[in-house]
Image (cartoon, rainbow, N blue to C red):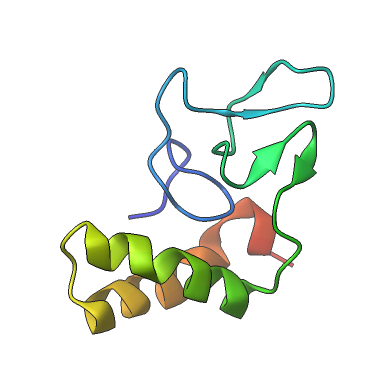
Length: 84
C-alpha cells in the first residue's frame, strides 16, 4: 500500500498535478496537497489523528472500515512523516 508514489503523510496515491507545495510554491513530490502546502503540513496532528482523518475517505472509496483502519495502522508508520 505505502510507497514513494504515495503521500508520505496520509498514504494517498500521488498524481502529477495533485502534489503538495514547497515554501517557494514548487511542487513537492512526497506529499499530497491535502497534507502539505507552502512547505508546511496542513494538519498538525498525531498519527492516530491522521488515521481518523483519512479513514472516512477510504470507506467512501469502498473499503470496509476495519480493513481500511488496519491498512492505515500498518502503513502510516512506514511513511516519512511518521518514521521517528
